[in-house]
Length: 266
Image 1 (cartoon, rainbow, N blue to C red):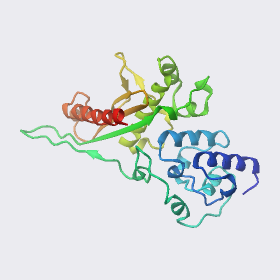
Image 2: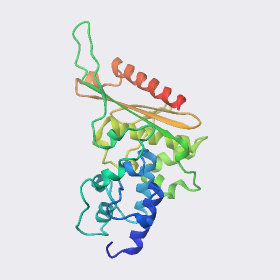
Image 3: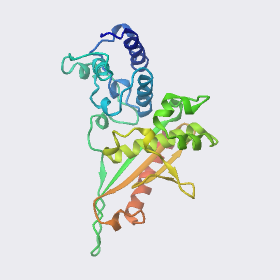
Image 4: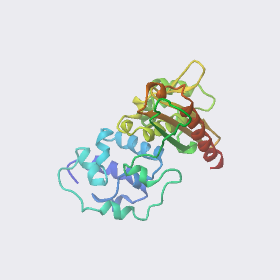
């Protein structure tokens, strides 16, 4: 596989660790997409960080990676070629769905939306209210001595976020909550899908609430899980898009209640 045997072998070892395939059976047709790694968002980002430690691959380039051969090509370790159409899909046929995220989300499908209806007199159009929800298990996040030098944390959090989370009583819960919010943001706005997570900074306002421009967001966690919710109004009047609007607020609360039920019942 190309002229970089050491790097190829390192990538095989990484793919093996994340998929359960043996290094010996991994070839160019072996699945290397998000479903193969495991539909969990955190697991996939850990995989990206591990690969990034071997070869530089931008987030945009990952969009077309379906197989190990695709990975080698975007990493510049293999030229041309290709794998039989459908090979990766066949290999994925028996993989279980993730507990919290459907396969449909990873196929590029548009996330579900909520469209509020007003009645009882004229009012400014509200447009479309899009809600993203994500749930993450805390034990998927590794505890390290130096978060600032760890590849996964460097790839997914800003320096400000790392400083804030490390000051909290449970840094892992804080990291997980912010990661869940970022996943929720991407689900609410596909335009953020190609933005590295370390460029999506979750800030904290003067009252300690998490904020992100253009969205109403919320996060919470239990001893085992963290949940993030993002709400965005698409279209409609400026009045409808303001955070003071009643309907977006009601929907935000409804989404948070649903996610909390999942959080405490999981």
